[in-house]
Each structure stands twice: as C-alpha cells, then as structure tokens.
Length: 553
Image (cartoon, rainbow, N blue to C red; front, side, top):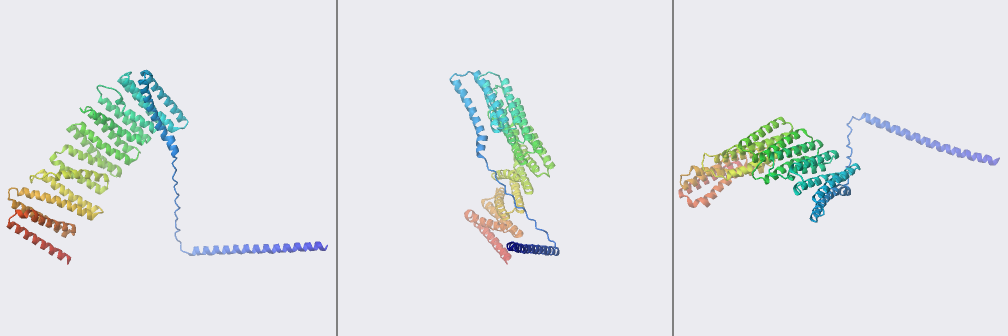
C-alpha cells in the first residue's frame, strides 16, 4: 500500500513539473506573439506617418545567355563530309569513265547508260535518306544528280555526237527543271545553288556554229527571273545573290570571246530587265533591305557599263535620261524612307554623272562634273550618307587633278573657267566642312593651304597671259606684286574674321615672295625694280607688325 502511494505521489510530481514546463512555453509563445504584433503596429505607424515615396524599381538581373556549344563532330561528319565526298565521288566517276575508255572496256553507249543509272541511283538513295530524316546526306546525294546528268548529256552531245543541239538543249533544260523541282520539294538551297549554276551555263554545253544571241539572252533572263523570284519568296539569300552575279558572268564570258560585239544589245536589254526586277523586289520583298540596296548599286553600275558597251550615242543618252528621271521620281516618292531615299538618290547622282560624261562636250564636262561632285557633297553633309561622300570624292579628286594638269593658254577659255570653278568649289567644300564637321581647325588649315597654292598657280598664269608682250622685268614685277596682293588679302581676311590661320598664310606668302625675289628674280631684274620691290615688301612688313602690335595691345 505504501509502495503504491509512493508511486502515485511520484507520478503527480512529474505531472506538475510537466504542467509548469508547458506554462512556461505557453507564456513564452504569447510574449513573442505580442512583441511581433507590437513591432508590426510600430512599422505600420511609421509607414503611414511617413511621406509617400516612389518605390525604387529594381531591374531584374539580366539572364546570362548561354552560348550554345558547337557540335563540331556533327558539323563535320554530318554536314560537310557528305558534300565533300559526293564531289569526290563524281570526280571518281569521271576518271573511271576515262580509264574505261582508254582501256576499251566500255563503249560510248555503255558509258552514257551508266551515267544515267548513277544519276537515278543517287536520286533514289538520296530520297530514302530524306525520308529517314538524314537531311544533309540526302540533299548532298540529290545535289550530285544534276552534275552527273549535265556531264552525261555533254558527253552524248560533244564527245560522242549521239544527239544534236536541239535534243541536247532540251535534255539540259529538263535536268534544270528536275533540279528546280527537287529544290522546291526538299526545301534545299544547296540543290538550288547547283541547279542555278548548271542552268546558267547550259548554253555553253551545246555546240553551235552560228550562236543565236537573242535566244541565249531570252533563256538566261528567264532562268534568272525564275530563280530570283523563287529565292525571294523562300528567302534563299545565296540563290538570290548568285542569280545576280551569274547573269553578268555568263554574258561576260561571251563578250571575252566575241570581239565583234554581236549580241551585246540583247545582253544590255537583259541586264536592264535584271536591274528593274531588282528594283521591284527591293520595294516588295522582305529580304534584308541593306543587302538589297548594295546589290542594287552594284547592278546599276554594271548596267551602265553594258549600256555604254552595247548602244550608240542617241540610244545610250535616251536610256540614261530615263534612268535619271526614274530615280529622281523614286527619290521624291520615298523621301521619308531613309534607306530607300539614299539608295535611289545615289543612283540618280550616278546616272546624272554618266549622262554628263555621255552628253556634254569635253570643254564643259569638267566644270559640270565638279558642280555635280559639289552637289553630291552637299547631299552628304545634309543626310550623312557615306556613299555620297565616296561618289563625290571619286568624281572631284580625279577631275580636279585633270584640271590642274592643263595649263591656261588664254584668259577667256574653258581652262580658265575650269580653274575658277574648281577654286570656288573647294572654298564651298571647306566652308561646309568647317561648319558641319568636328575637326574644324585641321579642316581650316588644310583647306586654306590647298586653296592658296591653287590660287597662286592661277594668278601667276593669268599675269603671264596679260603681260605676254611685256619685258621680262615687267612680268617678274607683276607676278611678285600679285603674290603680295594675295598675301594682303589673306592677312586682311584673317584679321577681319579672327582666323589666325589666314593671317599666318598671308605672312608665309609674303615671305615666299621675298624668297622668290632673292633667290630667283634678283639677278634678272634691274636695280630700280629691285629697290621698288624691297621698299614695298619692307613697308608691308612694317604695317603688318604695327597691326599685330596694336592687336596685341
């Protein structure tokens, strides 16, 4: 009994201790909850009492773009090796046929038949690979079909005389259609590239004693238009650019071996059609517009070259006028679209320059080209189109050098006009560059020096022409006086416009006159003229010193 009471008392004591412990924990939890609520109330009170402020916007840290690792193994073994080895395979087939011919193993019918069998086998096996989703291998095999067919047809026609020109041309066109169909079916630009290269050079695989240049140009134009418009729809950039280049290349090959220039008028019409189609596609397609503009500029220059090669004066002038008018209207129409406006205005300036070269007589041509270059430079200053600056420089520099290399023989002559126009244009360019450029000081110094040198040369020639029938002393005296007057003008302008550069140039010109007088003229002039010139130079030097001293004070 005593033991049971003792056990019960022990249990009660344990329960009391546990209850006390639970009370402590409950009190602690209640206390922490109250402190938390108090803190929240204090924070809310602070927030409500504070002035509302804009919460700062934190930019989320930019996600790092993980650079995808290039799988070189797949690139080499799945993409490039099939294309390389199909080329090796075709070379092997060609050499195998050659070896078989040398050893008399195969006759011509067997070789032609094997060629067609290889083409069919390549197409069949390539189609199977495409079905099994091995796209690159399948495209390479199908792309190899066309060279085999072209070579086999070429051998039938040229080497073995098994078919005539008409049949050969028909077969070659059929093969081009097969390539076009395969390109469209398998969505392969590689097959398209092989197709267009083969298509463009099909006429060269057909033997003809009297080539029909009209048919040749119609065929090439049709092939070009088909591939180019298809490439535009499918956005195949390589086919688009290749079609432009290959058309010029095909005509250029004929031109190199055709010294009689037969068919050039047909070629020029085809190139004009190409250029117009490029212009239409530029306005309609969604291929990168800057690349199309570059192609359009290149095409225009090449088109002008074909026009000058193919047509006589009147027809050529008419075409150039149409180009000028057309591109001028397009420049006005697309003035608000900067890329197109720059493209069309550039071609207008080019067309106008070529029109001047073609239509204006040699006497006025240099002056007109200088004015045209100045206008082009004005366009560059306003719109900052770098291509305009290049055109202006390519026109101004060679024409300016050609003007300076032709001496003036008569006061009232086209040579004098060219010199004067060149100097005025240079002054305008320096002023425009000074006002709109960043390197003002270097522009002012270099431009002023160039203009001063040209002015000295012009004034010297004019004085020599005016004093042609006078004595040597008079001529030398007049040249020195003219140089002194130029120096006075330069220093006066420098003092007036606060450009020290001009003042220094005037002083330098004055010292140059003194050096010329001492080193060159002194032994050849009379004492009276010598005295007068030295007195004049001395007085001008004193006046300049006085002006500088006054300005300094």
